[in-house]
Amino acid sequence: MGSGRRPVDSGEHTGPGIVPAPVIVLTVVAAIAYATFLVGSVLNPDLDFFNGYVSELSAADQPFHYIYGAGDLVTGVLTILVALGALRRLTRRPLATAGWAFLGLFGFFAIGDAAFPLDCAPSLDTWCALRERSGHVSLSHELHAVTSSSVVVCWLAAIVLLSLAARRYRWWPALARWGWRLAVAQTVLAACTLTAMYMGQWLGVVQRVQICVLCLGLLVIAWALYADRRDAAKAARDAAAASEGARL
Image (cartoon, rainbow, N blue to C red; front, side, top):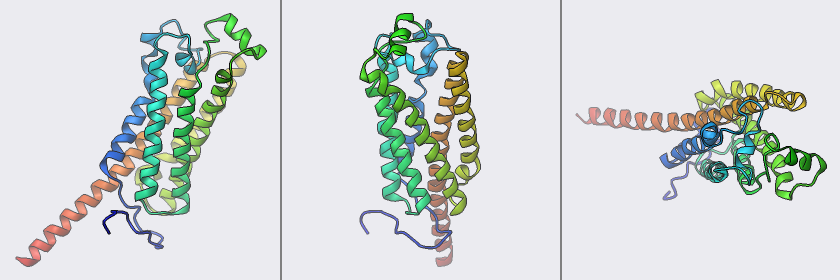
């Protein structure tokens, strides 16, 4: 009783429960922290906005690389805390539980992006590009491609599963409405990223839009959690008012 945890109800349309307000705040901060690339054109104008990898901003030899690495780290840590908070406080249903688990994995691999930066920026340095193509780069450089790809895959799995949960259990209207749209957009952008890599053009623009969609997904999750908390508070006020009116 003292734990504040909502008991699991087997009813199909039972509400998901509510999370503490700090969990919602952490979700918003995670989304903002993941958007540090937006200041890239100011802090590192040499990197080509249209064709340079976003990950090149955090390459070990680039100016202010620690800012972008810190953004990934903050996003990763906070997202894991959000996922754990949701798993602890919300009703356990299969789709929702899987969605929160994948959101936690998204955070884990975002930390991996921060822990394993690129050695250099291939789009800026021909020698770096040659080293990359010949495989003469560090393990960190090689692992960054794995963590970056895993970030997108885990985010996509999380938003799809949470959107399905919202529709299946009649929870989280914001996720039910926008989750699948964001998932479709991310899938299309992932295909565009592969095409841009093959063509060698427009990769920077596509990646930046792709990350914006990731950030929007976190904000939609934050709004969905906030709406449940707001509605629960309103219901409590209405009940209290009705009880007070009955006594009068």
